[in-house]
Length: 153
Image 1 (cartoon, one colour):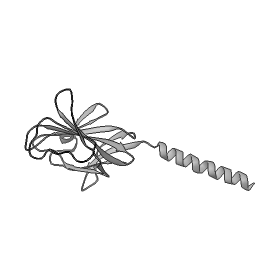
Image 2 (tube, rainbow, N blue to C red; image 1 turned 120 degrees about the horizontal axis):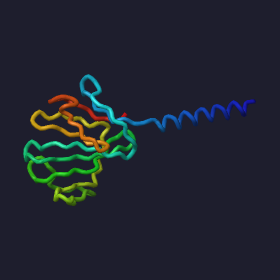
Image 3 (cartoon, rainbow, N blue to C red; image 1 turned 90 degrees about the vertical axis):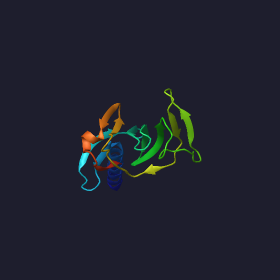
């Protein structure tokens, strides 16, 4: 009888672990102060999303791409078209510079991860979230000057 009880307990534990590991992840966009959720997007391990904005100094687009690993956001690559104050001009160890088909600079090979990504949504120009082929205006979703946090839950 004890063997059946142990077997049943082990099966229930294994089933719980499997169910927990299959749980869908969400990329949440929420207010930094109140925790109000502005948007939620189903994601999986290895999904890549990006945030594009117009750089305030050199007035050209910058795209930061991140990849989901566990519950962390890992810097994947940054894409921009013009040098200027505030954009990366030197490569760190392990980083690479290449050019895309449109001649934009692409820096990859980052070794940075974040538990959350905090930003203030643009007032003059928008921040655009691109995820699963969809582009979302963070200004429309959250409001101008909103202090937001992006996390994986």
